[in-house]
Image (tube, rainbow, N blue to C red):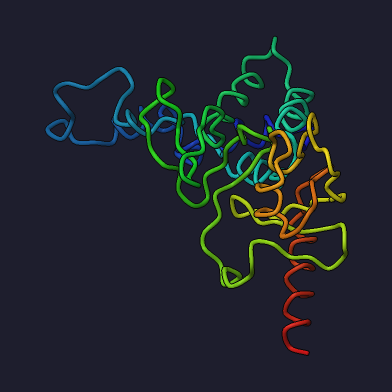
Length: 234
């Protein structure tokens, strides 16, 4: 995060900053005016009332910073934000209040859709472009609009023990091992539940279980798409 993020967001030139001063030349203008043209009643601020400078917030840098952090653990992102904010400074502390305008923390996953949790606001489904903290992984994610890559399968495998799975509009690298004869007491990292031969077969297409997973970065996802298209064209 930029060290001067608070200045960029809060100290943008205010509306009316180019307006003429309400005092300079006002008395001279009244002296030159005809007596019949003078106002009968006038506020103490004069005719410039409503043209004074006012507070203006520029939230573009905050939005761009958060979008650039998609895929990272939310705790790390929020920690980076707090490192550049002094809580004894009202202006800088005000910056953090805008974070929750862009990121939804309390969400549920229902039928493959991200829904705002009841009790934290009006229950609704998040739309494309909205960011949220994944309730499973704790990573910052964004709802992406349907892309032309929807023709790609949800599971891709190039190596015997490495697969790529698509979930919630994001790609994950899943590392596997052969399913033992007695899998009791083992935990599947991808399914996030105790190992079951039937569920593992349906998820991985064979006698495998997941031992680790990690989200792909946007650049890695693009390389994956190119690799699949290249194999299809051959």
